[in-house]
Length: 283
Image (tube, rainbow, N blue to C red; front, side, top):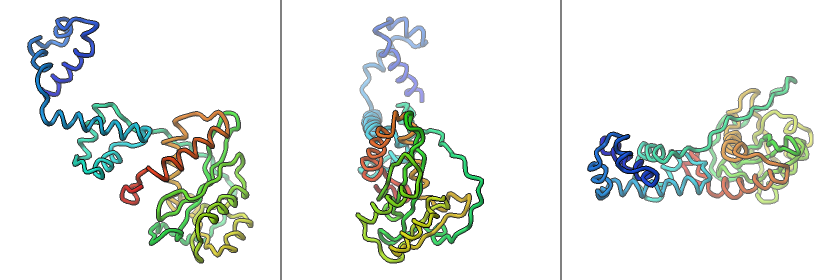
């Protein structure tokens, strides 16, 4: 601990010695000049060399992922690359580097007071799967823009891969927006008979047109219970990550700018690079 404190003092003097004399800085910090010069010229230990390399690696991972990864995910990336290090040590080095992942308070829209009828919850919080296109989850979230006000992202997630397999960004929250998202998913994926689509009880998902589309494609519709967001935890988690890591880190001027940013986040980061704890930190 003493050695670490002295090293930090030496680094402080190194930083300011161009503006102030070493003698003055040593007096202010109450350390002898001989001690300063000893530590300045002292060869780095094997531990210090390793920590410096780790810091560079941690910084690279942190900024490559646009400050979205905290210590836990960075630790998992290091382990996957064959670098043996504890989570506690990663946390310590990140603190020294003053690296903190993006954390933003989530916006919670007001819920309608209209009565909502209960429908069957086929999923019943069983998110396990054997293969793709076994269980899908869908939802709509709000995206703020300066010029166009609230815009809406309709998304479908495959619960096996945790990837967003289809999405539609719209200026209006409509049934047509949901149908478009379903049609896009159908184009790219074979839908087996009896597959489950889980949604909340929002009017867009309980609409007659949506129910007819699902019936035509032999998809079973599962619904969350009222006031139970964990029933749709997969897609809720995606929206939380989207808001924390992208939406609330910037301010979109209009619909078009938001659309480009969402495409970049979903296709360039979330579906390709982001690791997920729910699937053992795989992408």
